[in-house]
Structure formats: C-alpha cells, structure tokens
Length: 585
Ligand code: PRX
Image (cartoon, rainbow, N blue to C red; front, side, top):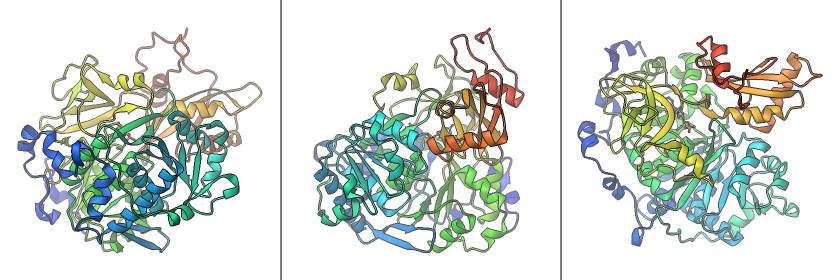
C-alpha cells in the first residue's frame, strides 16, 4: 500500500479504472440515461401481484426464497464476539412468515403501527420484515433511545405493539402508562407473562411457517421513521410500498449490487440508511448481507471485512474519520482485498477521507451518496462508472430533477449557493408526515420539495453540499433536533431556559452545544454540567446530549419569545450576526 491517492487524483478528479470494480457496473451510460430514463422503466425490477398490488417484503424475501436463491445465504449475522449465524432466504422467509402469523394472532390490523426496538440481531430483521408482510406499518427505533424519545414516538403514532428485549423493555415501562393504545409488548428473550408480555420465542415456535404475504396497494405504507426537524418533536416520516422500486434500483445502480457480492451497511436499522440499505434494497437484489453487532471498533470492522469477504461497504464519514484517526497499521493486518466499492452517507465526506481510502483500500475511493429520511433512497451520488470529485456529493439519479433554487422556487445559475430542491414525484418519496399535514406542506413549496440543505452545482454538473438551511444538527451523522434537546434540558430542575446549536467538530462533524440559563438558587459547576449531560442522555439518547454546556445570563430571543439559535451559533463561531431586527428589545 503506497501513496496511491497522488497517482489517482488529477485536476481534482479521482479517475477510476473500471477493472478496479472487477465487475461491469450495473449503470453504464449515465449521460444518456439522465435524458431518457422514465420511472416506469424500473417497475420490472420488482415483482407485482395481480391488479397492480405489491408488497415490499415479497420482493425483499419471498421472491428469492420461492425461487433460485432459496438456499443462498441472505444474512450473515456476526455478533462481534465470535458467534456467527447464517440465515438463507428460505429461512428468512419462514421466520418472517412466523412473525407475520404472530402479529395476526394478536389481532394487529392493516396499517397498525408496530415498533421494533431491538439491538442488532436476526430477530430485528425478522420482526421488521414480518410486520411489513402482515400489512402493518413497521417502525424501527434506535436502541439507544431513552424513555422520552420512546414515548414521543409511540404516542404520536398510536402504536399498538412493540417488539423489544428484556433489557430495553425497562425503558418502555418507564413511559407505558402514558401510552394507552400500546396493547402488545413482545419480548424476544425471557418474556414476563405475569406482566402481560408476549413471548417472542414461544409464539414463534407455535406459529406456522406458512403465510400469505398481504397484497398491498402501492400507496399503502410499509414503514415509518421518526426524524428531527428544527421545531417541535420528532416527526413520523411515512413510506409507501411503492418505494421498493427505487430502493431496488438504487441498490443496483448506485451500490452496484451483483449476485456474487457480499455487502455490509454499518448503519443501525433505527436510521433510514439501515432500513433502506441495510435491509430492504440489498435483499430485494438478492444479495448476501452482513449484520455486525457490537459498538464501533476498528479491529472488529476490518476483521469482519476480511472474514466475511465483504465486497461492497456502505458507511458514514464519522466512521471514516475515526478509522483514519486510528492509523493505517490496523488495516494492514487484514486481508481487505475482496472489497470492490465503498460508499458513504449522512454528512459531508471530507476529501481527505476519499484520499485515505485510495491509499488504504488499494485504490478504492469512497463514493459519497446524498439522501434523507424523507427521500426514502439515494437521490444524488457518485456513480461507480464516474470519476469522483473529492468533497462533492455527485450527480442526480436518472429520474430525479435536482436544482438549486431561491425562496421563490426560481432556479439559480450554476455556481450559486441556494436551497437544494427536488422536483416531487420520485417513487420512494415520503407520502406523509404522520398526522401532520402542515409539517408535510412545509417541505413542498413552489412546485419543489425543499430538502433543508443548501448546496451548489459546478460547471460539470456535480453537486456540492454547503450546509443546513435550518437548525437541524448532524452529529456523527445522526440527526438531532435542537428543540428535543432543549425540551429535555429544561426538565432538569437547575435549568430555566436552554438554547441548543451544532458546533463544528473535526471528528463528529458537529457536536451538540447548549447554552443554559440556570434557575435561581443553582450555580455553575463541572459537577452540575456532568449531571445535566447524564440527565439528557438518560431521557433522550446516548448520542443526543450536549457535549458542551455554557451557562449564560440570558438567551437571545425574538420579540415573540423564540430563541434565536442562529445568533447563538454566530456568536459561538465568531460569524457575522446578520439581521437582528426581530431581536427582543
Ligand atoms: O444535511 C444532509 C445530511 O443528512 C441530512 C439527512 O439526514 P437523515 O434524514 O438522518 O438521513 C441521513 C442518511 C440518509 C441531509 O439533509 N446528509 C446526508 N447525506 C449527506 C449529507 N450531507 C452532506 N453530504 C452527504 N452526502
């Protein structure tokens, strides 16, 4: 491994030899396709039921299990502690059938909301897909969430069931009395029958391995995920079964899945990347996927790539930066030669990350991909056949019209910074914000879907991320709303008011920083700050707490009493404070 990046980057472009990909890329001829492709061209990538009905779970599992891939390994689950479990498509089919039968027996009805609140495990995939088969809406929930985060999600969606384990269920109990519509608590290990819990193991054992996957209208919902905005509690982003068309297409065209690939997505199923590209899309392509348990650990990650012969790897910039920080000696200990293509998502991928990969992974760069919980699949990306411009998100998927627009929806000239907007109508686009039409409508303006990001386009048509147009914080690639953190903070007795911003950070992209006004009688100390951090972590989630807390006398507010986070951020970063005409006098 020599310094290969310098040989491969010319004039800011990483030129790739297609031999590096080892297989002919699925997408060839982008320039032609961007002009000619129609969404109906992709319909044949999935199987439909008579009368135009569909079920994404049929495409993800059943069609392979009932066809030539029945004995192919679908899941290699590596718990990170030495135990590896493999499930073929046939086994995944039978297990998901059983789970669908369990839900039907419990009386879960069409489009009821079922939450999957589990650590990474085979059961996580089984219950998620089984729920979709049974025509309910599956909602995965990040296992680090605390009681407040759980309550907000289950309450807003009127969830009827949650699948969890003996450890995580304790957090559900802390808020269960506030969830009158939650009827079933299904516990994977050691259920407590006396407490009314349903035993996953017992019910699965008793259930039939036969189930008729429900035929759904393409517009009916397959899954929903809660995500953060600038204001208010997290909102439920709802996705239709039709989305599987684009989820399959992008897995082929962008992630370049071929029959012989072994693929690993590092994202948890609690986030959209894990759902779409750590479960649905790749399996719809019939590819073998690796699921890795445990926490981030460079040795374990490289070992997994080596041991399972991973050829396609989808990860996030923070992970790339953490691996870079650990140095190049660790990867040298492992045989990583099966890797063909690497991808990243969730936050800007620094050019250094692209270059580092060229050096460490034998001339293979990371391909940056851009999308959101709301978009349901990748919309802008660096395609395998194209040269990469390090630092750029790449180009729009054929079928996607992306532009930089102003507040009135006018397309801005090339090179100008503005709102990144997409013309609505792509198949995997969210269908609604759960029970909140007004929130949904906020995205849709002047005939465009406003992404909330700002960006610009260069003269070659490559898109460059600039930042968020709103106050949403991306920390280690995870999306956090300042309002949620502020709400948790002010529940602490020592805090009267709080304002929260994202502060740029080398490793994590951003960290969460809080400015707090203390309640009279409390005074600033390191102990108090630590206690506050612990308090927020336990209520919200391990990743959603302020790593920095500043105690202040007052917070800048508008005359209507809204905290001006923009000002806090400008002050913190030494930027111009801009228009302050609405500031409280
Ligand atoms: O700000 C953009 C950032 O992540 C946001 C979407 O977050 P989420 O819904 O959690 O989905 C993340 C994974 C699909 C975007 O609005 N983002 C995503 N990809 C990139 C990115 N920022 C810069 N570069 C990217 N490639």
